[in-house]
Image (tube, rainbow, N blue to C red; front, side, top):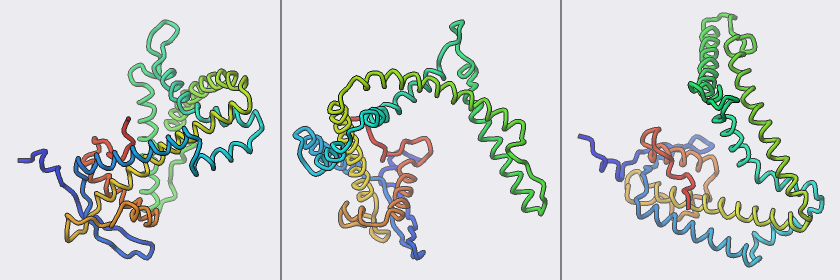
Length: 273
């Protein structure tokens, strides 16, 4: 009988290829809870040090970013850059506003009623897949018959509905950005520079945390295929030294082991702190 303890230490042998198609057999396993805690702790420490440097206004990252922003003196450009940091949250809020808003009668709007928006999205994917499959089958059969997406009535109608939804979201986004722009326009060039510098430093710290955590998790995950207790790399830094395309293969293999099923969340995702 299957037991959840079977997942502990479970892994799989994967084949990694380099640019010359040389194959490498690596055993990939889910890091232990202790290893995950260690990876998270070290990543937290690195992020804390970076934030402390930003707070004290010193360090290579701070100096480089401060210099890049010091060279900006166009007020409109600074406002545009400042808005870029707000746009993601504004767009998410606009999506939820349109998706879950109410109509004039206080009833759920058409997008959420009976999961209409979801049906549109699923319908688009389904019809596009059907058209692709049909066209491939006709081509394999030596026939010139095919379905042009632009002429397919069902696909055109679904696309039009999706575009209506996006247009409504874009309208709300533009209205919200205008409100935010009015706030930032009142700020001086120096205030905008300082705000952008702090936002950029915070983003750098978060990206550094993510990369550091990922590398350490991958270091713990990769083992020799003939000695599954022995780490494949000598250090997490060695993981960073391998080519990006190889590291991507390893991450993909790790994610497959970590998920187990598509319903489990990828452990390399940035956790809330």
